[in-house]
Length: 365
Image (cartoon, rainbow, N blue to C red; front, side):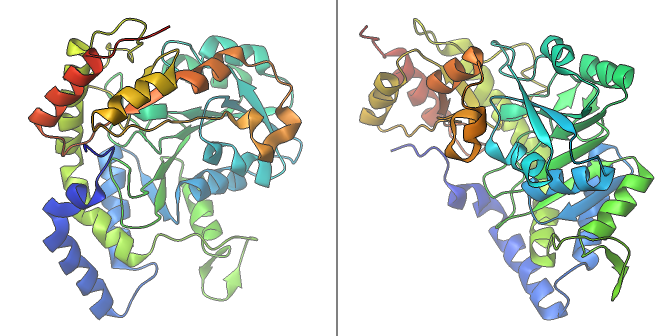
């Protein structure tokens, strides 16, 4: 069986360094808001070409803290792609804002700038641009539109570490960018972890307060904050792995290029091939009108797949009030998407076998 993702294999090259870094933290006696975090924040800010990186507990909290720091009124509307993962939307709901779901571009499956303008009202305060599957949204028209209407742009780059848009690193384009370092990500910790990047000095300072109970000085609280801190062990692990992110992404790009060039199956839709060397290729997501039949074929031949994601947000039990929305593009995408194995530790032989097996699929209508 070729697993969809084997985290033991992914982390094996760094195991000795991870163990040494973890032991160093344990022996230091300092586990929260210490030198490892400061070191990672500096390194990741430099990597993203921004002034600030603020480490937080996870990617969901990163979005939440950005929204909190902007201090939008409770009746604010936040534009968001309808086909994203639920973690992109939950912070909007938590804070009493209204998510305005926008249909994606049917080819890229990303937020469609042309559809954003149709959804802007006097209550709109921000756009959350989700870099789904490791591909950047079309940020140039999104930023232009936001400037025209006085909106903030928040990038959800939980799947796009190291991705590039028009020669700029993701993390440096939006007003603020939220990252997740969940273990399966291109840059993954060994537990939950996240960060925010921005070049807005005032925003970064406020988020540093908010992540720590609203405090920078112990027992002096300037804001009603939360507890959302990237701990020292996870920061130390990320310090070990960050220098290798570009090399791992290059391997992902090489695998993606082979898939794009060599997979040829009737009725199978591949992702766009126009940015092979810029996308981070967190996931290689294809589409087929008979997903169960395709998955069964790969499973029978020892290839594990995944679905990102099987049910759109507006049809989830948690968001029943949006069930009547007419989102046909979103619903079709969720009915058809399939993720093939794609990671930096896939061997050339495994990639060849996956391609051969996919190409042997005989769609029975």
